[in-house]
Length: 295
Image: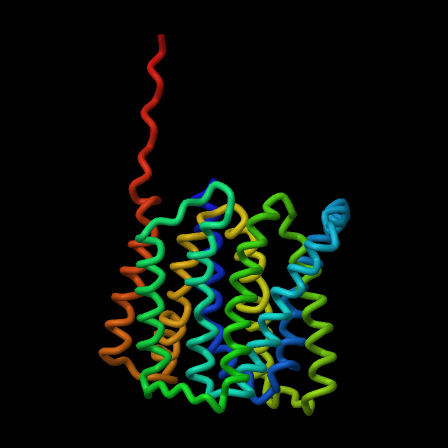
């Protein structure tokens, strides 16, 4: 059960690795507008399930704190991430924002029944170093003039790690509520778009397909899979393995001709993969209990 849930959670990481490709192919739609459209699309699978099985609507009746945590997690993360990119260079802001896997691994020590080991932290740090090699391939220069952007990026990392850890504490809450989180995030993103941005729609059918893919997978199904994974799987392994997302994203961009393969990517691959394996030692060491002999 735990292994299956962990693997389901990892599919979210795989889907997030396509985020850069789909975003690059989606045209020039501004970020909050893109977020509003994609989260609306991402809610469709959940709405279909609820329509086909109306009895599941009762699962949406949850305490206010569940809704606050969920909406703050999804919308808060994207709002802070976009704010960081608007107020700091993308490379530095991205690196700070990608502290969230490490924060999840370290923060898991506060969860009931979890025990933080040295190899969990070491694995996450190796992944962070691999991410540094990928994202910072053209150099890193943290400038105090962008303090607001860096601060937003750190809050972004803290928001997503906090959401993931708190979600684990509400493991009895059905993943169906993610549908509501997506709808609320879409509405709030729409309000931000109307107040801060100029509307730009995709210019070609190819761009529309990219937007649809973005909404159905990285900004849709991925959040349902992540919710199920962090609630029922090994959250420490998922945290460390999350550093595979920027690596896989870069490899996908290389495959489609948007980036070039080099020694940095190869070494980052070793760091991220090795870190994930190191963090997953408990799973590899877990032995099958021998059957009890019949008396």
